[in-house]
Length: 499
Image 1 (cartoon, helix red, strand yellow):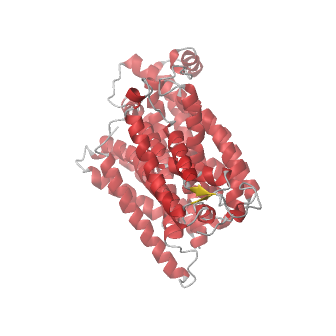
Image 2: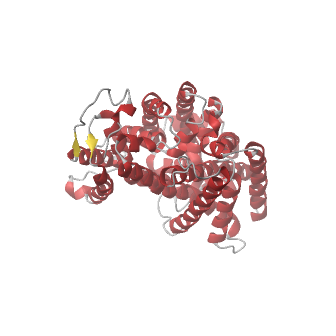
Image 3: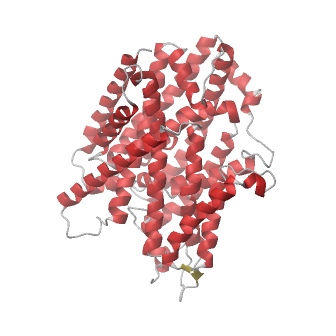
């Protein structure tokens, strides 16, 4: 496909997105930016969260991953389902009861100042790295198939993408994102379904026959029973469960959308609906990967990285219409992960580090200008991170993403678990040390696990070990509170301690 056509599609889609932005951002204020004035319809949030949770990583990495891991990723998805129920029944009631804008404010009430800043800080690190990685995936495709042909440097491509994200999230924030995510989820799912039909047509084999062939072949293998394998099904399941609890339930970006619902009941309906749809959608992506694998084998298509399989087949073998469908789907998958991350990071820095919600001395106008400055500063960090990832493109992006999550979300898992399921107080000033040491220990254990544990290899379950080490560290430096009148899960406000 000609680079000019690809660029034209990108521009047209962006204009459509900006139209939605203009409609939703009118008369927006700080409350609109942070929590959508708590007026977001739950069903719109649930549908839009599909695109935000899947992103360009799922769109390209999961189908490409099928060649190496078959359908074993589906066991991770089953773990997701359990994790979503934990979020709906344990975490959301807590967040709504405490009327939080930033979910990390809970850590200040439960433990104290340093624990609070540690939790918020780890989210910032994790989200900047994770979102940058997701954005890099899409920008790299545009670079290979468009800008390389025009000798445009990668950094220019990345800068343009970041500027577009800034423009349409600058004012409306979460209120805009709720609606743009809905639009983008629709285009992304259509792209997957249509791509399956295009592959079927090109191969001259009915879709039902290809589904049957995949289902009865080794491609659809889900359960790996070799305990030393990093994809062992129990590791996959529990990793998926806790990855969801951390990357969704302890993630400001995802919870900010839930907190924009009118009340707890609607937020829970959103989460239950979203979790069910997510299982089906991920299975659809895996079948798309199976279709791509069958097609590549029949045509002798060879790619270097697994992430390149989908774009290579769509843009070079299936014709111009299929190429257009792929590009629209990819762009639709890319924007939700970028816009939500930028908005949530702006919220965390503004609320948790600058305290804009507590400063009565600031006018709405001055507060808004500070928020704008934070928004732009985070965008610069995104840009720098994307350039770094462009030098490290050697593994499937989803693999990198979960590895990052294991190191950066583990301490959050330990902090919240300790707060929810114990009544003990911690030595608040020790928390940052524990939170840093835990992932460092995990890194060395993972690096030398084969030698230390008789051939055992850590997979995504590293997040469990990280959270456990954080929990144990907090326990070692904890004490019983003077008086406890309520269960830590039934009334968290009674757990505010003096430090």
